[in-house]
Length: 367
Image 1: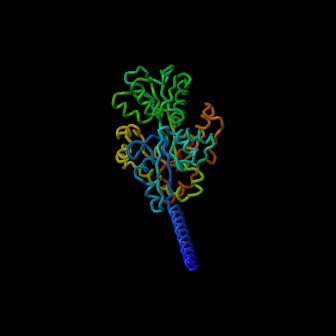
Image 2: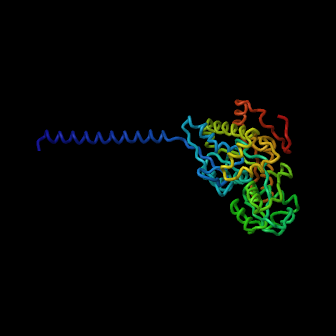
Image 3: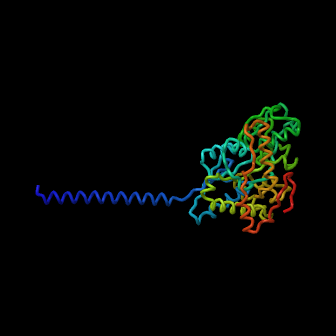
C-alpha cells in the first residue's frame, strides 16, 4: 500500500473518531440539559382514600385548594408540578411515606403526626387544616344501643392510629369505659361502614361519612363528640418535611399563601352552598356536609390559625398517647409549629382579622 493511502486512511479514521467523540459529548450535554430542565415535582400526601378520577376529598381548606387547583396555579409560573397521593391507610400510611421521604407535604390528623414524631419523623406543621372536628358513634338500624355506656362488651369498629382513636378513648373515659371494656375491631372507614350496615359490628366510631348511611336508613347516629365541647374534637394539619423546606422556602410560602386563600374562600358564609357542592365531588353528598356543619360558622372550622388552642391540643394528644402506651417516647411540641409562612400571608393579604384565635381552653380569644 502506498504511504499516501495509509496516511489518508489514518486521517479519515481519526476524523471519524473525533466526530464520534464530538457527537457523544453533544449528546451528554443535551442529556445534562434535559435533566436540568426536568420540572420540580411537589408531592403532597393526603390521609384519606380519595374519590373519583382524579381523586378528590372534602372538609378542609386543603381539600378546597386541591379541587380548585390552587397550588398548581400558584406554582405554574415557576414550572413546578404538583402531584397528589391518597392513602387508604390514612395517617399511619402517610407516616410510612414520610419516613421513606416519598412526600414533601402531608395532610393528616393530630394523633398520626404525634406517632410519627415519636418515631423520629421530623416535620414542621405550617397550617391548621380542619380544626375542632368531632366524631360520631353510629349503630345499625334497629339496634337497642342508645348511649355510650351500652357499648360495654360490644363489638365496636375503630380505626386505630388515626385521629379518631384518642377522641373515642376520651369519650369512653368520660362515660366510665375504656377500650378494654369493648371488643375493638381495627377497621378502616370503608370496612367499618360495611360492617356497620351488615351488622357485623354493634357500633362504630366514624366521621361525617355516617350521615349518608343514616339518610339511607341503614344506621343511626346516637352520639356526637363535638356536643361535649372542644376537648372532644380532633385537629388536622398541613406539614412539610424540613429538607424540602430548607431547599425551597419560596415554594413553601407559595403553598401556604394558596392554602390561606382557600381557607378564606371556604370560611365565607356567602360560599357555603358552593363550598358543599365543591366538596360533594369527593363522593360525600351536599346533605352530609350540611349535617356536618349544622349550627357552626364556616370560619370556626376552616381557620388556618396555629393558635394556643391548636398547640395545646397537640400537646394533649401527645401526653394522652404516652399515657395509653401508644408511644414510648414523650413528645413535646416545642419547635414543631412554624408560623412564619402564615404570619407573612395574613399580613400581606390583610387577613389578620379574618379568623379569631382560640385560647388553650377552646374559648374565643381577643384578636
